[in-house]
Length: 229
Image (cartoon, one colour):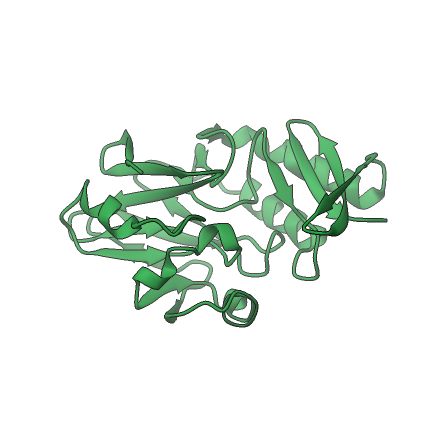
């Protein structure tokens, strides 16, 4: 899988339905998520930058961690630890990152923004230089957002997006799924859609996901996959 240049020192890799990002500074590079197929993401990064490379996971869903075994350690919000180690049987040392932490790649500061809701420890990274957010599932356009299961919560999701909407330090979002990039003005529609799902005003279509009955609720450009009711 060949990295595709997005802009200077910034690449994406399409791994099936999920997207991986590689960001380089002057001192090191960061891989954002390791994908779903388990392909050699380290070699993919080495093909575009000679810098030492680290891994960050935006959360612990299976389509974001398949290549983690290639790394002895990785950055992740600690709220994902139970899901990663117990449910996903993940390996390696979790290096905790929290809301407001900054990973500096050398002249390229990346700020951690905690966005609980899709999962408890979901995060995205603010690339201050390009005024862009990288990685994660909460913000999508023409996508399917998983919101069923005990570890997902619509109330937290709405709160997270409202916090994000108040910020004035980004213009673009590079999501892990669906359209890429998308402008920040997709966020109000996601908030409105999630609030309408919570209010019970969005009709649903029954689906089966891995043997489990769920409801698909279409709102605007996206579909929320929700608890069956």
